[in-house]
Each structure stands twice: as C-alpha cells, then as structure tokens.
Length: 339
Image 1 (cartoon, rainbow, N blue to C red):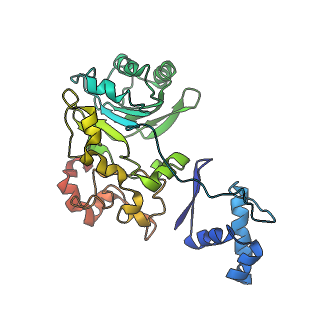
Image 2: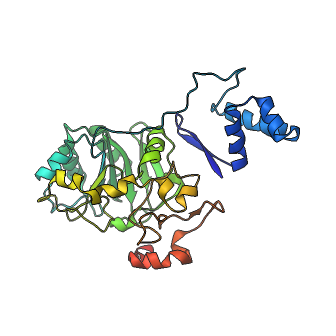
C-alpha cells in the first residue's frame, strides 16, 4: 500500500500502490495521456481517482502544467542542538544543577514531563514555573489518574500555564479522550499503568501524525531521537529514558561534552528508510520511531519491537504475542510489563 499525505490539513489517505502510480503519472501528464497509457478500459477508474483528490482539496485540474508548482522542499533544520527533552520527574533530583539550566538555554522547543506516581497540582505548578523565561513552546504532561483532579482543575492548570499543550492520564479506569481549554488541549485517559520507561516505544496507528514538520524531519533524521535529550528517574542523561546507555549525571556532566559525544549523536541520524521493514512501510514518514526496543537487540537498524504492523500483508497484530518477538521481549525484560 501507499500513503497520500496532506501536510497542510494534517490528514493522510491509505491507498493501493496502483492508485499511487496513477497519481505520479498525472503529475507530469495530461488526463488523456494517462488514459492512453493505462488503457481506455480504465478511464472510469482514473477519473474516480481524480475526483477523489479534488473532492479532498488535494489537487485541481488545469489546461497546462504550471511552472509555479515546484516540488515540495523537503529540507529540515533547526538552530538548536536540542529541540525536545523528556524528564522523568523525581523529587529527589536537584533540577537547579547547571546542566539543567544550560540545557534550557539551548532554545528547547518541547518538553515531556513524566510522573509515574501520585503528584499534587501544586507540585506540577512549581516545576512548570521553572521554565518561565525559556523558549519552550510545548509541554506534555504524563500523569497518574487521580479522581480528585477532574477536568475542571486540569483546565484551570492549562489556562494558568498555556505552554501545556497535551496531557496523558495513565492508570485510568477507562480509555477515553477529552479536550480542555476551549477544545484546544487534548486529554487522553489511558487505561493501563505507565509506571516506568518500559511502557514507552509502542507504535500505534492513532499515534501517526501527518504534518510538514515530522514528514521533512523523517527524510533526514530519526523522528524519535533526533536532537532529543532525556533525564531519567535517577538523573542520568540519555537519548531516551528507555535506552541502555547513559552519558553521565546532571549534577556532574558537562552539557557540551554530552552533545559532542559521537555515541550520543548516532541514533539521531537513523532514518526510517535505513530501518529493516520500516523502509518498506507506507506509514514510515508519519510514524515516530523507537530505537530503545528493537526486534534484534544486536542490530540498531532493526524494526521497532513494539510495532505489530506488517507492511507486506497490511495487517496489524498484537506485538506481544508474535512468536518471533519473544526472544527480544525476554532480552529487554518486558515479559512482566506485558502481563
């Protein structure tokens, strides 16, 4: 199968490869030339394909090829060495360390704060206020379910700190989604516990994102680890909390030495087109990745372990039950997590 991505309206359409071939042909040929190429018997089908893109504002008809319609610029770059950060919050960690301050002077754009255990809203407010005066644009909160923290209180929190753009409430009694702040901030209630970083790395269709930012970054870099830095529950610096390797502790490490370390940088350049199976998957440029849990722990270019999609059959299955994944599941110690 192929994917037709609308990067402006942030939608995508799952289409057969044969349909994609027709669209590619029509980019440089007239409709009648297309009919002549594929045969008069396929005229109605071709016209149906054309009606589909026009009805969804993905294209239009004209009497000539327009020179103004240049190919999309797929370059990607940012002026910051680190654009996104994950913090596994721990009261025992000193977040006033110089490493922490220097990190958020690097024009970091996005931050995910993970709380695995019960936390008060006052604690959250105090921590979020640390980022006043920084360039942060986006904060995601991962919080345990607390029936006393209803949507009204969460709405008040978000209005007080508008950098908070999304919330994931784990260990919820039900799986559902709401919106607060006049419908602009999603709140996802997740019915499973997220009590450690081992819950990270699942690939699901509802995680896919079709936008220019992710699509262009995916052409050149890893969509999960490019320019990412994480501080785990014990204060150690990693690419991601789930990765095995660390690069020192925030109380003693030098930020510059971490960023200049080739080992820290190596995962950020692994594109989806470099990864086994993913390189053949139609969803690869709308999908985030996971290098922490892979099917072959000895091969950093192997498919994400927690992906149950097979692009060769176009079928999804429960990844935890796949017989070929059991060795890796045991290697990472995920059996108890999955039970």
